[in-house]
Amino acid sequence: MTAGLATAGSGQSWESALVGALDRGATPLTVVRRCVDVADLLAVASTGQIAVAAVAADLRRLDSEVVDELHRLGVAVVAVRSAADDRIAVRLQRIGIAAVVPDDQDGADLVTILLRERDRQRLAARGEQPGTGGAQVSDRMLDPATGGASTVGSDAGSADGAAGPTPRSGRVVAVWGPAGAPGRSTVASGLAGAAAEAGARTVLVDADVYGGVQASAFGLLDESPGLAGACRLAANGRLDLAGLVGLCWQLTPELRLLTGISRADRWPELRPSTMPVVLDGCRQLADLTVLDCGFCLEDDPELSFDTLAPRRNGATLAALTAADEIVVVGSADPAGMERLVRGLAELREAVPGGSLRVVLNRCRPTAARTDDAVEALHRFAGVRVAARLPEDRDATDRAWRAGIGLVEAAPSSPLRRSLTELAASMLGGAVRGDGGRSRRRPVPRGRAAG
Image (tube, rainbow, N blue to C red; front, side, top):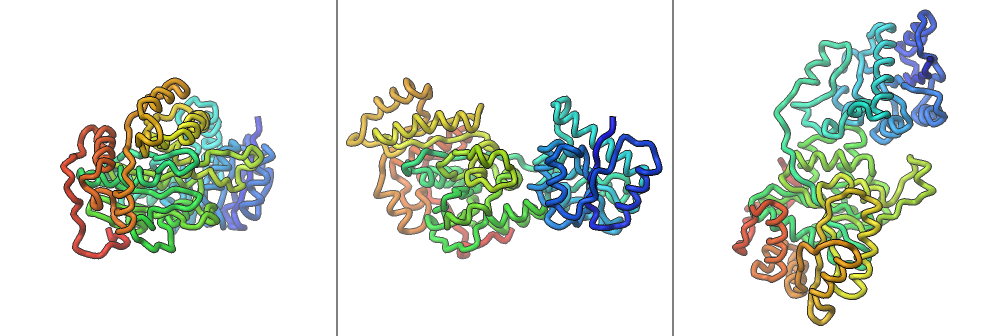
């Protein structure tokens, strides 16, 4: 049975050599098209005529979104690099291309590699073995000093694939809540601050696609969002640990902040395909990563047929899917409870099998009896409340006004103590509740230097 092949070699000599090798020998590969660019390659892939693609390593606009789309269409990807540039294999692996060959590879050997990658992609599509059509997400965000792609057919490339030290694998917790401002950002920053106060290396990520507020909450006028920058680097396979650290603000010795977009119209900069890569970097960087997520889970059914079209809530859904646990925040008042029950149903549909921890925020006797709210959630949503956070407007106003965390602004606040207890349950009791203030560095806050 023959299989279709598309090339996108930008007119390089290896492309002609490959086509010649296919013409001379009896192989199950047939050249369907010699593509001129990425758009041409995606167009032919969408027709279902090809099973494998051979692309130039320096092909313009070749990024993680393109590679993910090719894999989704069942197309295996092999990149051909310059024999003099073996370091580019690292970048190619980070965007999802596992097989990289030098351009001086013999044509017959290249055909063998293409057939092997086609077979791997087919097995992965049937679920008969772990996905090998592309690099695993955990391999897409590596320190250049220790990680890289395995370069097929090149002794020089073997150095890139050398195993380095086992990377840190921290937890990722997403904080989400329905519409109506139930206090997602306050809970997210409070949890991150409590974990950092306990000595856990923590990264707070503002992933709200409708306009984040964490930079403002900490008194930062950040016009270049760190998360958007990390997504851009990840899309091009250039994000490493040093780059991720450089994009973060160092708030306390143990707490970093990766700021989000401050304007809602910048949401296309947060690409869904890059979120798992960025979060994997955060896992390596910190013991705990706390995500402040947007409220909307709507997935436009019309856009779902065109996977290259940007989806506003795609980054939110990708972040929630990648998280180890989701803290669901609801407001303890009649309107907030109604939104929470409906939101839980939407969340279960959007992220099936997700580990949920429900938190009632702004608990106060004048709005609703907390016990009644807990009983209603158990009855109508089938969930148990993990924590009840009291309304403490004075403490939150003090923190926002001063541009500091709740741990520092109101160490004896009931809300602060409740958040500390919640963080302790998430970290296995490692968080201390002594109300001590975080120790700041003796230098002004700014982008982390390392």
